[in-house]
Length: 123
Image (cartoon, rainbow, N blue to C red; front, side, top):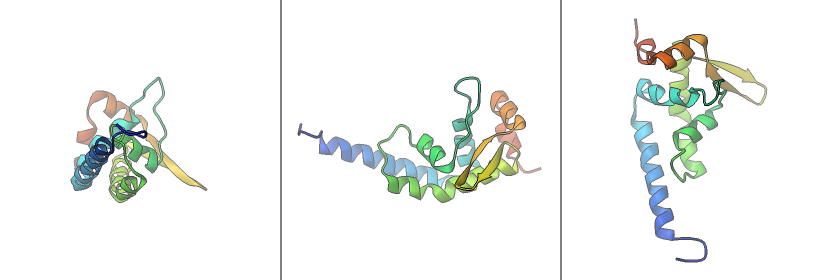
């Protein structure tokens, strides 16, 4: 192994990250939303407030991802978060430098009860 690690190992990790981005981008907005809503699951007693980049980082948390991969997820993540907001699962708070999404009370209950899928189903 070289001074800075194994290049083949790094290439394999980056290839796996690229494959995951391709998979995520290939999902429907609904299916992606169902995966991403887990990012809002409370780790402690309080659900997180996440901006779009933090959601992308959560989605690729198991991979050694380059910035360009996060950029590829911008559109799909924005669409999925919009769907969650439209279904009253999350609420978007806009600030001067950007904004963040967080669970609504209905979203907290649905995530806890496993009923987010039903909330995303059109009436």
